[in-house]
Image 1 (cartoon, rainbow, N blue to C red):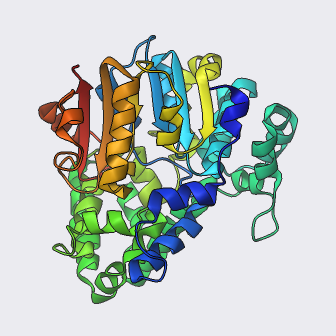
Image 2: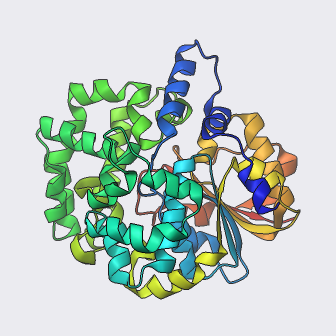
Image 3: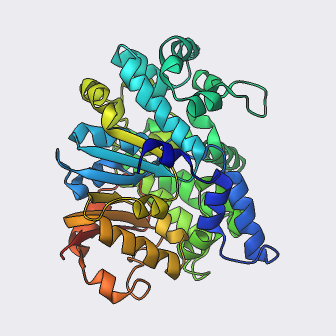
Length: 414
């Protein structure tokens, strides 16, 4: 598929509607689905919430790997470059996410030093970033991405100015985390206190003493019982149902378990997801964990490999339909399958199977613990893949983002 054809894709609203809408517009769930798609059209994820280290361990990338992944916030796409794959196709329904990835790619190519690159995307709260954008990045951006970043948001400010005002506090997820901090303070909890812990045992003490009781408060339980309450996490109604086991588990209890794992399962010195959740930033001046693409040791490798990435605004299935048979060998689905009905899942796996080389690997995450494919995707398709259950569980245990119920690895056998 040539570059011109790739640009001739539907509007973001059409792509999102196709992916999310399962119910009649006037039904209660249908209304929620349409509210979700409206919210999802703008920036959702300033940072992706899947652990790239876990991804790369499962994918076993090498210089021959041809990856197709959902772009999301672009962090993992950039981090995969540290493994020097042959090609990365980053596909997303949301045009804003494509603009963010294109910004990161252009910045990696044209910012002269790691200090400038980290100040832009690591600290993301320095006025100099706006000048760097105008002088060194903007001239190399595609027209659509440049129009987005130089366009104005609801406050009248250019969107690029968010990198002078802590970019990670913006977007649907950034605002959700900020709102969570306000709610926590109302309930008597200061989330930043967790970052003062000096050991895993201190992290556990702080969580048990200060965080755990808040999840039992009636206000929190009432708020999270609303299916729209998790839209800020990018969770549509169908995925909310999966998280709550269709109402069998109170959402406050589910969130408590996931927050507990994020707060206590990994040392803060090694978990940048915890820094974002509890501090709304990375550690100051790079003196702490950050995504692989922001690590100083990886800067030159990232800079020289950006040419292998194609950022594509499209539906994942539509993209695969236009790819040759046996042309790809690594697939990263994030948690998108939680959104899909059986018909869409089957269509997706038919195209994955057609385009996959022998030995290809597919990874995805789920809100619940178990893989969602058996019984929903025809056996004739799944029989061509081996589900590595033991390896999936092993890697899930290492996933520092800690917000998903399961990590899953499938390997093509025939």
